Image (cartoon, rainbow over all chains, first blue to last red; front, side, top):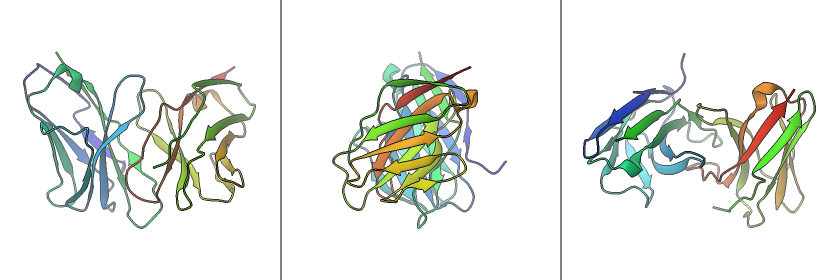
Length: 114
Length: 109
């Protein structure tokens, strides 16, 4: 399967712990996006990269959140000092810049903060 | 990015056409209309997009009014597998997608 993959699929952690999620985009895609989705809501944008450059960050992204895409391939999203309000589905998507904005989404990582 | 308004939910009989409306009265001239859907427990999936003209692909048709202030997504022969949340999004041809709450389409046998 050559789609977007995310790891882990599920993560349960205790409040105050740090967590890191990984996203592997479709190999030729140079753009990578992170979104967060809570129950009953549409996904909300967090940040995106073109190659290794982080081009935009949402104001929703507090300083406890950091994302990297060091070699322009996979990306990681780290949440430090997790809070119960961080419980959500974290979705990654990728696209090919220059084409129209068809984003391919991964299955998501479901985070539960106890 | 322009905001969209969609009905919260709709029902459709299996085999019939599903017509999902979207209002985007503040759309600007260079913004596209995108439709994505999200089947339960999966990531969103691209369906179709358009700028001014009506568009059709293997999944659906998109009808955009002449003033571009509204559009309709048409699933010509809905099946049970089309039950999902459908998102109408207005935005540029690149960059982030701004999702609303979408329309929950329930296809019934």
